[in-house]
View (tube, rainbow, N blue to C red):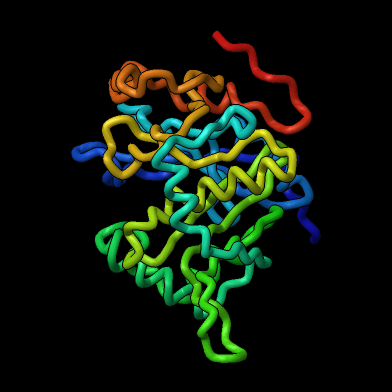
Length: 281
Protein backbone atom coordinates (compact mmCIF):
# COMPACT_ATOMS: atom_id res chain seq x y z
CA UNK A 1 0.00 0.00 0.00
CA UNK A 2 1.29 3.45 -0.90
CA UNK A 3 1.39 6.03 1.86
CA UNK A 4 1.53 9.79 1.38
CA UNK A 5 3.01 12.34 3.74
CA UNK A 6 0.57 14.35 5.86
CA UNK A 7 -0.33 17.76 4.41
CA UNK A 8 0.31 19.59 7.68
CA UNK A 9 3.66 18.95 9.40
CA UNK A 10 3.57 17.31 12.81
CA UNK A 11 5.46 18.97 15.66
CA UNK A 12 7.25 17.16 18.48
CA UNK A 13 9.29 18.08 21.56
CA UNK A 14 12.65 16.58 22.53
CA UNK A 15 13.46 15.30 26.00
CA UNK A 16 15.28 17.86 28.21
CA UNK A 17 19.07 17.82 28.22
CA UNK A 18 21.77 20.15 29.61
CA UNK A 19 21.88 23.52 27.87
CA UNK A 20 25.11 24.09 25.88
CA UNK A 21 24.90 27.87 26.36
CA UNK A 22 23.77 28.65 29.92
CA UNK A 23 25.08 26.73 32.91
CA UNK A 24 22.55 25.01 35.14
CA UNK A 25 19.70 25.12 32.63
CA UNK A 26 17.98 22.43 30.59
CA UNK A 27 17.38 22.58 26.85
CA UNK A 28 14.32 21.35 24.98
CA UNK A 29 13.47 21.72 21.26
CA UNK A 30 10.27 21.91 19.26
CA UNK A 31 10.84 20.21 15.90
CA UNK A 32 9.25 18.90 12.72
CA UNK A 33 10.40 16.81 9.77
CA UNK A 34 11.52 18.65 6.63
CA UNK A 35 10.55 16.46 3.69
CA UNK A 36 8.34 16.15 0.63
CA UNK A 37 7.54 18.53 -2.20
CA UNK A 38 6.88 21.45 0.15
CA UNK A 39 10.23 21.25 1.99
CA UNK A 40 11.60 24.51 0.61
CA UNK A 41 8.41 26.44 1.32
CA UNK A 42 8.33 25.06 4.87
CA UNK A 43 11.99 25.95 5.42
CA UNK A 44 11.36 29.49 4.12
CA UNK A 45 8.27 29.96 6.29
CA UNK A 46 9.60 28.53 9.54
CA UNK A 47 12.99 30.24 9.21
CA UNK A 48 11.07 33.52 9.35
CA UNK A 49 9.58 32.28 12.65
CA UNK A 50 12.79 31.48 14.47
CA UNK A 51 13.38 27.89 13.31
CA UNK A 52 16.70 26.44 12.15
CA UNK A 53 17.52 23.49 9.90
CA UNK A 54 19.60 20.48 10.89
CA UNK A 55 19.69 17.96 8.03
CA UNK A 56 16.03 17.06 7.39
CA UNK A 57 14.67 18.56 10.61
CA UNK A 58 13.51 22.08 11.47
CA UNK A 59 13.77 23.00 15.15
CA UNK A 60 13.32 25.89 17.55
CA UNK A 61 14.26 26.04 21.25
CA UNK A 62 11.23 25.45 23.45
CA UNK A 63 12.66 25.21 26.95
CA UNK A 64 10.38 24.83 29.96
CA UNK A 65 11.80 27.69 32.04
CA UNK A 66 13.72 29.90 29.61
CA UNK A 67 13.44 31.53 26.17
CA UNK A 68 16.87 33.10 25.98
CA UNK A 69 17.71 31.62 22.56
CA UNK A 70 16.60 34.33 20.12
CA UNK A 71 16.88 33.81 16.39
CA UNK A 72 19.02 36.57 14.85
CA UNK A 73 19.34 38.00 11.36
CA UNK A 74 21.13 40.94 9.71
CA UNK A 75 19.33 43.45 7.48
CA UNK A 76 21.69 43.46 4.49
CA UNK A 77 20.78 46.87 3.05
CA UNK A 78 21.16 48.61 6.42
CA UNK A 79 24.39 46.90 7.47
CA UNK A 80 27.53 48.99 7.83
CA UNK A 81 30.75 47.28 8.97
CA UNK A 82 32.49 48.58 12.06
CA UNK A 83 36.12 49.70 11.98
CA UNK A 84 37.30 46.34 13.33
CA UNK A 85 35.15 44.47 10.77
CA UNK A 86 36.69 46.53 7.96
CA UNK A 87 40.10 45.48 9.26
CA UNK A 88 38.93 41.86 9.23
CA UNK A 89 37.93 42.19 5.57
CA UNK A 90 41.33 43.66 4.73
CA UNK A 91 43.25 40.96 6.66
CA UNK A 92 41.47 38.27 4.67
CA UNK A 93 41.88 39.85 1.26
CA UNK A 94 43.90 36.83 0.13
CA UNK A 95 40.98 34.43 0.63
CA UNK A 96 39.07 33.24 -2.42
CA UNK A 97 35.44 32.15 -2.20
CA UNK A 98 34.95 28.66 -3.61
CA UNK A 99 31.24 27.63 -3.56
CA UNK A 100 30.33 24.00 -4.17
CA UNK A 101 27.38 21.63 -4.10
CA UNK A 102 26.51 20.12 -0.70
CA UNK A 103 28.89 17.20 -1.00
CA UNK A 104 31.27 16.28 1.83
CA UNK A 105 34.99 15.80 1.19
CA UNK A 106 37.87 14.43 3.26
CA UNK A 107 39.50 17.86 3.03
CA UNK A 108 36.45 19.47 4.65
CA UNK A 109 36.26 16.79 7.34
CA UNK A 110 39.95 17.21 8.21
CA UNK A 111 39.44 20.96 8.75
CA UNK A 112 36.21 20.27 10.65
CA UNK A 113 37.97 17.87 13.06
CA UNK A 114 40.81 20.34 13.62
CA UNK A 115 38.28 23.06 14.38
CA UNK A 116 36.26 20.93 16.81
CA UNK A 117 39.32 19.58 18.63
CA UNK A 118 40.58 23.12 19.16
CA UNK A 119 37.39 25.08 19.82
CA UNK A 120 34.63 22.65 20.88
CA UNK A 121 36.33 19.53 22.21
CA UNK A 122 33.63 19.05 24.86
CA UNK A 123 30.66 20.04 22.66
CA UNK A 124 27.81 17.92 21.35
CA UNK A 125 29.54 17.37 17.98
CA UNK A 126 32.92 16.36 19.41
CA UNK A 127 32.51 12.67 18.57
CA UNK A 128 31.17 13.19 15.04
CA UNK A 129 32.80 10.83 12.53
CA UNK A 130 33.14 11.25 8.78
CA UNK A 131 29.83 9.52 8.05
CA UNK A 132 27.93 11.81 10.42
CA UNK A 133 29.76 14.78 8.94
CA UNK A 134 28.72 13.69 5.45
CA UNK A 135 25.12 13.43 6.62
CA UNK A 136 25.27 16.98 8.05
CA UNK A 137 26.47 18.34 4.71
CA UNK A 138 24.59 16.16 2.24
CA UNK A 139 21.21 15.39 3.84
CA UNK A 140 19.42 18.52 2.74
CA UNK A 141 15.98 18.60 1.09
CA UNK A 142 16.36 22.32 0.30
CA UNK A 143 18.65 24.52 -1.80
CA UNK A 144 22.02 24.45 -0.04
CA UNK A 145 25.61 25.27 -0.89
CA UNK A 146 28.95 24.66 0.75
CA UNK A 147 30.76 27.99 0.63
CA UNK A 148 34.48 27.27 0.92
CA UNK A 149 37.29 29.76 1.39
CA UNK A 150 40.81 29.08 0.18
CA UNK A 151 44.01 31.01 0.86
CA UNK A 152 45.79 32.03 -2.32
CA UNK A 153 49.36 30.79 -2.46
CA UNK A 154 51.35 31.61 -5.56
CA UNK A 155 54.18 29.20 -4.70
CA UNK A 156 52.07 26.05 -4.25
CA UNK A 157 52.99 22.92 -6.27
CA UNK A 158 51.49 22.76 -9.72
CA UNK A 159 48.19 20.87 -9.89
CA UNK A 160 47.34 21.30 -6.20
CA UNK A 161 44.52 23.40 -4.77
CA UNK A 162 44.97 26.37 -2.48
CA UNK A 163 44.61 25.30 1.17
CA UNK A 164 41.08 25.14 2.56
CA UNK A 165 40.79 27.78 5.28
CA UNK A 166 37.08 28.03 6.13
CA UNK A 167 33.74 26.44 5.22
CA UNK A 168 30.09 27.40 5.68
CA UNK A 169 27.06 25.22 4.96
CA UNK A 170 24.50 27.72 3.68
CA UNK A 171 20.80 27.43 2.84
CA UNK A 172 19.26 29.69 0.21
CA UNK A 173 15.92 31.02 1.44
CA UNK A 174 13.44 33.12 -0.48
CA UNK A 175 14.43 36.19 1.56
CA UNK A 176 18.06 35.55 2.43
CA UNK A 177 20.88 33.19 3.30
CA UNK A 178 20.79 30.97 6.35
CA UNK A 179 24.24 30.11 7.73
CA UNK A 180 23.60 26.57 8.97
CA UNK A 181 27.10 25.76 10.26
CA UNK A 182 30.58 27.16 9.72
CA UNK A 183 34.09 26.08 10.72
CA UNK A 184 37.60 27.27 9.97
CA UNK A 185 41.31 26.87 10.65
CA UNK A 186 41.71 27.63 14.39
CA UNK A 187 45.42 28.37 14.02
CA UNK A 188 44.52 31.60 12.17
CA UNK A 189 42.87 33.25 15.18
CA UNK A 190 44.14 36.74 14.33
CA UNK A 191 42.16 36.68 11.08
CA UNK A 192 38.76 36.51 12.86
CA UNK A 193 37.56 34.00 10.27
CA UNK A 194 34.15 33.50 11.89
CA UNK A 195 33.44 37.20 11.50
CA UNK A 196 34.85 37.21 7.98
CA UNK A 197 32.53 34.42 6.84
CA UNK A 198 29.52 36.43 8.01
CA UNK A 199 30.79 39.61 6.33
CA UNK A 200 31.34 37.76 3.08
CA UNK A 201 27.85 36.23 3.22
CA UNK A 202 26.46 39.75 3.58
CA UNK A 203 28.19 40.60 0.30
CA UNK A 204 26.82 37.43 -1.35
CA UNK A 205 23.29 38.34 -0.25
CA UNK A 206 23.71 41.95 -1.35
CA UNK A 207 24.83 40.89 -4.81
CA UNK A 208 21.86 38.52 -5.07
CA UNK A 209 19.36 41.13 -3.88
CA UNK A 210 18.47 39.14 -0.75
CA UNK A 211 17.47 41.20 2.31
CA UNK A 212 18.63 39.02 5.23
CA UNK A 213 21.44 36.90 6.63
CA UNK A 214 20.14 34.41 9.20
CA UNK A 215 22.79 33.75 11.86
CA UNK A 216 21.12 31.18 14.09
CA UNK A 217 20.55 31.93 17.76
CA UNK A 218 21.83 34.78 19.86
CA UNK A 219 21.74 34.00 23.58
CA UNK A 220 21.95 36.86 26.10
CA UNK A 221 24.35 35.88 28.86
CA UNK A 222 26.24 33.35 26.69
CA UNK A 223 29.85 34.17 25.86
CA UNK A 224 29.72 31.70 22.94
CA UNK A 225 26.99 33.69 21.19
CA UNK A 226 27.88 37.21 22.30
CA UNK A 227 29.76 38.05 19.09
CA UNK A 228 26.53 38.18 17.07
CA UNK A 229 25.41 41.31 18.92
CA UNK A 230 28.46 43.06 17.47
CA UNK A 231 26.95 43.18 13.98
CA UNK A 232 25.14 46.27 12.80
CA UNK A 233 21.47 46.12 11.67
CA UNK A 234 20.82 43.02 13.77
CA UNK A 235 17.25 41.85 14.40
CA UNK A 236 15.99 39.19 16.81
CA UNK A 237 12.80 37.14 16.68
CA UNK A 238 11.03 37.80 19.98
CA UNK A 239 7.42 37.33 21.08
CA UNK A 240 6.35 36.36 17.56
CA UNK A 241 7.93 39.16 15.54
CA UNK A 242 11.27 40.49 14.32
CA UNK A 243 12.61 43.58 16.08
CA UNK A 244 15.84 45.50 16.25
CA UNK A 245 18.06 44.13 18.99
CA UNK A 246 18.59 47.56 20.57
CA UNK A 247 20.52 47.33 23.82
CA UNK A 248 21.52 43.65 24.28
CA UNK A 249 21.30 44.03 28.06
CA UNK A 250 17.54 44.62 27.89
CA UNK A 251 16.91 41.00 26.90
CA UNK A 252 18.26 39.37 30.07
CA UNK A 253 14.72 38.78 31.39
CA UNK A 254 14.17 36.13 28.72
CA UNK A 255 15.73 33.60 31.09
CA UNK A 256 12.71 33.91 33.42
CA UNK A 257 10.27 30.92 33.45
CA UNK A 258 7.19 33.16 33.24
CA UNK A 259 8.26 34.32 29.77
CA UNK A 260 7.58 30.86 28.28
CA UNK A 261 4.28 30.06 26.51
CA UNK A 262 2.78 26.54 26.75
CA UNK A 263 3.78 24.15 23.94
CA UNK A 264 0.25 23.94 22.55
CA UNK A 265 0.10 27.73 22.27
CA UNK A 266 3.50 27.86 20.60
CA UNK A 267 2.41 25.35 17.96
CA UNK A 268 -0.94 27.08 17.42
CA UNK A 269 0.86 30.34 16.65
CA UNK A 270 3.09 28.83 13.93
CA UNK A 271 2.16 29.99 10.43
CA UNK A 272 2.49 27.27 7.79
CA UNK A 273 2.95 27.84 4.04
CA UNK A 274 -0.32 28.82 2.41
CA UNK A 275 -2.06 29.61 5.68
CA UNK A 276 -2.94 32.94 7.25
CA UNK A 277 -0.84 34.16 10.18
CA UNK A 278 -2.25 33.10 13.52
CA UNK A 279 -3.69 36.01 15.55
CA UNK A 280 -1.43 37.16 18.38
CA UNK A 281 -2.96 37.38 21.83
